[in-house]
Image (cartoon, rainbow, N blue to C red; front, side):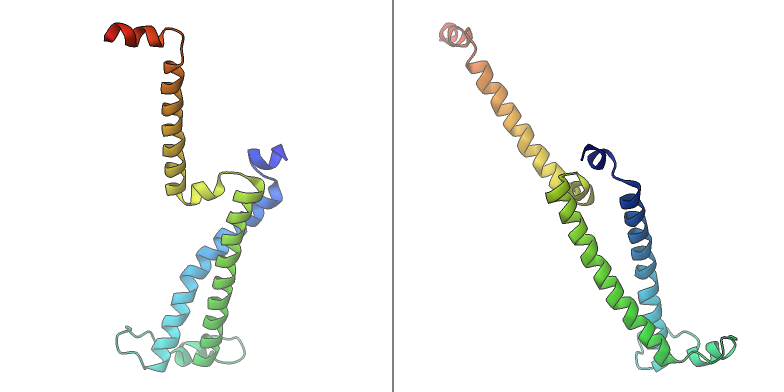
Amino acid sequence: MAKRREGGSRILKFVAEAMHWTLYALMLLTPLTGWIVASSMGCCMTVPGLPNIDLLGSGLSIGRPISAMTAYHVHVFFVWTLLALISLHVMAALFHHFVFRDPILVRMIPVLGRRAGSVSDSCATANSQLDRLNEPGANVVRMEER
């Protein structure tokens, strides 16, 4: 169990690295495919248009031209995959926080660490003040100050 807290196993590191790169790729590809679909449909005047996907796909030698409908299905697949990976990412962070009890979640959300640190710092300060009051010579000092 200590190995996991120190740095984790190689498999967990590989899975985390693959998850992050997949999330980054999908965060780029999902809006791009949506832009391609919106441009090919011609319905959105506010979106700057890209070249027609049907014309773009006819130049590729993949057997058949890429259609706007194919781009739409790819976009929908990317959206659902991205939502699933975000859910897995949140669950993995909570699992690390509550089961492994490692600081992964605090690294992801630094505000949690600052708030927890400030509470523990204030408790430490209060405890050190109480310790000073409970020292044997503490009452004598107070009596002399009067």
